[in-house]
Length: 327
Image (spheres, rainbow, N blue to C red):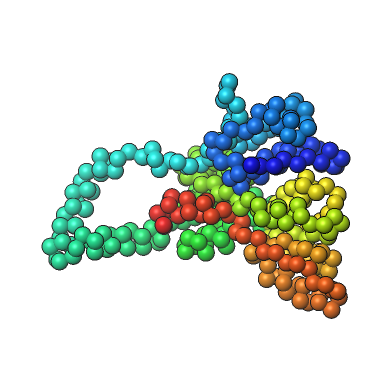
């Protein structure tokens, strides 16, 4: 169950706090496609906000394409990209009867050469898998203002899929898609609407991925003593902005939060010297560890360094493998 926390004395408007928390819940799949959002009455009771404020937030979410209103029913999370699209395909045998005859003949020839059905199946699958790996082209796209998020996605997808993945700034996606005849665009749910607007006219599919829900990290943050200095390090400026909002919503001014991207050596060094607990994404972890070691003579007690799980949720990676025919 998603917990909403609104800090009434924050400089961040209450409507913005709620918007970001619902957007995070959708992006991390805590609110999956088809999920019905709480009614304005329910959410007003939970958050203490006026129902008009909640209605305004729901309208903003609808404008971004993340949710849709169904008359007389409520507000629902929209399915994005090609989710569930594989279930709507026409029967393959009706589409390609001549190709099916060719497969039948090839199979008969293999059996005639002494192969068992199981061995023939393995031969077909091995060749298909190899060709899919050679032809599959995955383009990760994010706005240029947050290429760090794209770099995290590329690292994790290349490791999981075993194929090259190209990072394309959203501003260059139109040009890149104009030069390719096939491919799949992958992006976070935060950016799905922008990506769909560019790719759909070119008949290129866009697959949204869900981010990790950070449930374990949130639990740790909730239990930190008051006045703890907490550090957050990531390749992505966008992730750090969300971290600031979520942590402030959870703990208000009870914690001192410091954030840094790994490319900012000055802020990173200041952070490791001050923070008592540091969260880091996997890509940044080695650099944070190195910075702590370099500053060990200036630190009375080294900070506790916690490495977060993958930026992309495991279910999304498995879905992407199936969509690409890689697993």
